[in-house]
Image (cartoon, rainbow, N blue to C red; front, side, top):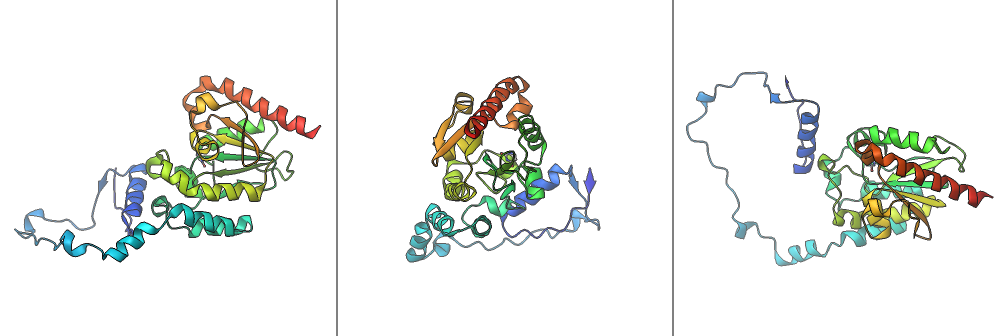
Length: 272
Ligand code: URA
């Protein structure tokens, strides 16, 4: 397909790449300009841009030391500790500039559902639809997630904490091409995740996939971990396979159903 691309004024290479990805996802294969260009008219020798030599562009030693001294995890920890409410935490995350994923994302995806819910679902990171809408789990995997939890009487739309869900992700920004988040990105955003859980104060956390298991339990291997109750941040954690995995591997739905029944039983036992 050939269309005239929108005028893009990216601020950095991450947003340029995100804009390019978006066009490819929309099906753009060729760029067409309004006016034809006669390539034979181009000057024979284009002037070479002047590039600073490495020696000239080297930062002063003090400046380089300052750059190295920024400890993004410590900055995240301080910002998270200072957030006294979910609204303040949302603002703190939106203002955090040390994670490069933010530069390529359209939205900072914070959470959805009922913050007073007894069950908090922790996912990995927004995908394309979530980045577009600014809400977690709204794409195909999110629709499956809604159906799965609906089957045991839990919904993000419920006003009753006993039947409600609160949904968030380890990372609030979409990684390029929806790649897996790196250990550095997970470590950097972990203080925000911890604070998010403290402030929402759920009785139970469901960790969907490897990224939340890494963030909460310090290990991955979701096919081994799933279905076995663990403990993190002073509350029970149930690791489950991610709905995106279930869409690709329908045979794994049987085990996911067993995990949902285990969650239902735990909620009922706590109530009686
Ligand atoms: N996958 C996730 O882990 N989170 C989302 O919000 C969407 C897809």
